Length: 111
Image (cartoon, rainbow, N blue to C red; front, top):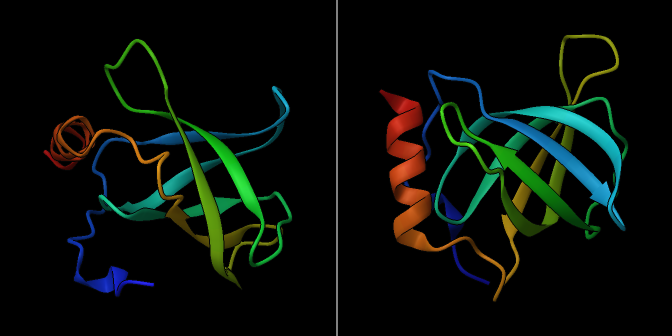
């Protein structure tokens, strides 16, 4: 396992929303707190276990098509908002969005 903290994390200025699917059926919705080429911190009211594999539909501002990716929950924690949880999601090997495409989307969300 690599040290994902070496990746530059970006706090988006424009909202990146996420739908977390289960066999094509939305199971939870949330928003990305920060994102990098290796993963994201997601705020959601969904309940997941560390180690669980998730299918995420990331919707970036001004992008007509969501970016689908698969990620593994690597940590979880509560927030100060009732019912909202934070999850660290690491993009699964082989299902990462194209690095160049993701880098472009992250940059546009930061500006």
